[in-house]
Length: 451
Figure 1 (cartoon, one colour):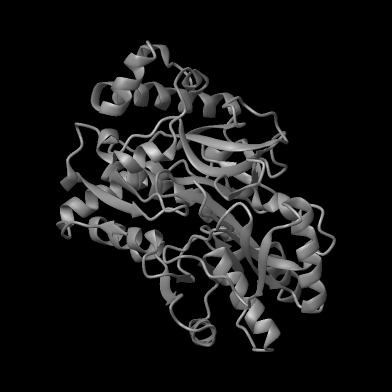
Figure 2 (cartoon, helix red, strand yellow):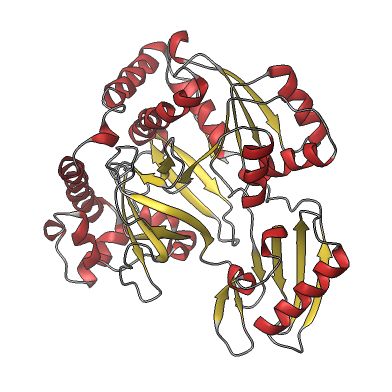
């Protein structure tokens, strides 16, 4: 959700348009800058944000003083390690402590995220940060141009839920800025509250070059069309940026329909974090927008090729300030630069939410994906959702590709979970055609009711 103010006057809107154009002027080249130049820009913003956080944000003033760290000692992104990691619960419980005293609500926007694990968050963004973020989207537009054939002016359609933050931000930019027709798009929106048949019909009528939305929804949409032999209009490219698209759905779209699929990585607290390039082999982190680390359970940096929790510091928002903030995602750190020529660091994969964990009878917490790591029919599981009620009682909902008869697949899953959890568990396994995301477009692979 987003809370907007009144529409601004045309002079004010033109001012923000010029501001955006100023930041967008280098977007086509910035991802290719030498690593030293990118690092210098990031370090400059880190120094500014550390001082700003200490001077104006109650949470960080207390944290710096408690840790006996001066903001002047934070000179580089590497120096952020001197500060403790901030768990997302801190923002949930006391959002006002992260708001700068220099921020005025009338000069910003309130974004509300319901969260995936139920820990709702309220995040304020200042207008300058939002328009810098809008300018940075141009680097992603350069990737889309590879498939769409042009940077602007084409038809673009999104399949999104009514509470989608992206659509609400579009309303904000329309209210507060003005952009000439030459750099706009012909847009259409289909709601996830509509039936798949209605969405497919709307796509066929509008005929977009670029189709976007939730990875889960778009994957299920094309799977539905394929299973029911419904003709589908084929856009030049599909992009998604909320929930991960199941691997089998992505393969279906790319191999059966011949439509390339690309993704981006963002969150309400940080907005733009990373994006895939034309090679689609990883996510290029926008280090001018965020500083990041990937850490293990003890908060120590992991090596390239290893998986850990991503820790982020936002370098453009001066309303709700977040440094060393754990977003809740598990990612894998890349081992080197991408062959596309961009010098931005790479995350080779986004592997789900850190809180998609279950508690084993012995007390160990494991990610839901681990349970199926050795399952022989894993490639036939399109989507799963495990709900844990007690240490021994579970319900598993399964979307399969239909290649294995359900009774056989059900018996195999039952054996697998009894081997990986415990033999005496109370387990219900339910088939499903589609496991929907929540009202905000987010999906939980594991729902554990054990604190």
